[in-house]
Length: 260
Image: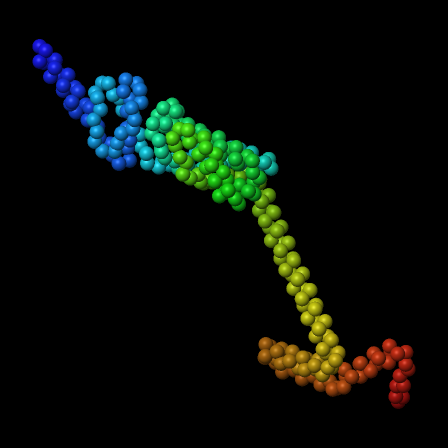
């Protein structure tokens, strides 16, 4: 009888129930009579049946989708945001002993932190500076989860849902900005054109023949476009006469016109 009992005890003690095998991405947290004995794995190892208990953890990076959260930005706009959280276990012993359910704890920490950080920014920052918000959320969540043996690798905002009325208002604002830019560009063009025209007028005033040359060039262009022939004859000294009349009027001189 004693031999049989000894054989059974040896089978339980040295048998396959005490032989464990963990993959490269797995770790086993060993408890002996309820007390932590350390972390084992990867590979094959042996624990004492009945006396030792094992809690297995996956240390690969986990991807968690944070459901859309309704929050109010600092400029009183109600929006919905969702994100993706990437984290992994650095210390399996802490992940088991420091928090009851590390997966739920990490998710809730990320969810509340995302809502709080978004609420501290205005809508324009949420739309334009997502990287800054992502880094801020990552830093806060990583600080919370560090005592649990968990490291947050990355946080990415996926989408921002804006109310339809706000979308229309933003579209009108963008349209007004574009119209403003168009008017400024047009005004700058008019200013530059007026400057060039003034310079051209001064050149023509100094060289009246330049006006006739320009007129001939315009007639050439009109003829080429409309396929017509236009002949206009003007006195070559027309501009000189106009200038003489202008100078005479300015000097309050009388002009003797020929009588018929």
